[in-house]
Length: 288
Image 1: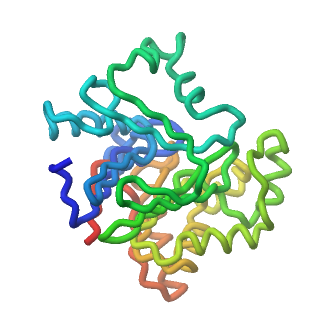
Image 2: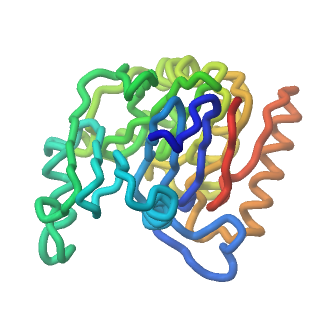
């Protein structure tokens, strides 16, 4: 990993779209690939999510490292991939991943991949990757979704890919049904307070802001965020930089621009000085 500079933290966006890829001329500025974010810090490469953007990441790594081994990609025999995740859907993590690659869904099984793949089912909410401390928190999403806070020498990065506001949690749980709820929740106020403490003072918050406030009213219980709720969280937690993420498939570039403008206005109204942008495929944020 000698090619990864340890003094800075790099966050590279390979896919920023939510739900389904949306290639085309109307999404060319922000991008149409689904969630995939690369974090490089302290000699480690961490990939957050494996949406369709991961193909671009793999191609970039191949160009960068050439014949050198990488502890990451799965399609080359020289490489090593370690997958971290939580079991919360009543099916083990390894079975979930392997099931997506079985016939008729995919022509190559996980066992046939030449790379060395190790799956680690996480039990603790606080763990380490190399020298990096990772804290995790279960989010408000049907099934299971975890957010991660990566503490690096250059600053903290929080990744929250699928999260619905806790304000309507009681309604969400009724709509969702007990069989689709993978964990026990506290009261809406307690859950929100816990999340604010998890985010407190983060240098970079990458967060699901899929819906406008009006759209969210038609999608309660779907497991995704609204612009006002996301800005409110960031303001209450005093994060330093906010990147709106998981853009809705129906939102073209102009719509994303309008959402950013609204978020910035809301930040100004509450008297905060948080930098707000929309995550953009191919862009990079450097901490340190």
